[in-house]
Length: 88
Image 1 (tube, rainbow, N blue to C red):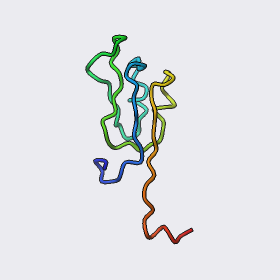
Image 2: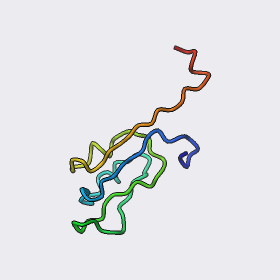
Image 3: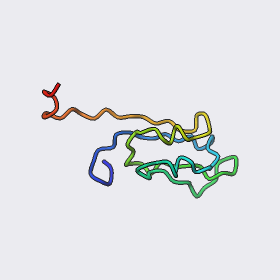
C-alpha cells in the first residue's frame, strides 16, 4: 500500500551493480519513489534505490536509464472491483 492510501500498481527492481548513479531515473520518477544510495557499488557510484512502495508501474525510469539491465519495472494486476465487473 502506498503512502497515499492507493495500492501500488507496480514495483521496481534495481540492479545496483549496473547503475552508474546518473540520477536520470530519480528525476524522471513521477511519484518520486527512487533515490540515490549513500553507499557505493563496486564501480564507486551511488546506485539508485527503490524506496519500497508507491510505484505506479509507469516504466519511465526504465526508459530513461542508459544502462541495459539497470532497471526492471514489474506491473501488478489489481483486483477487479464489484462495481466494474459488470461494466464490460
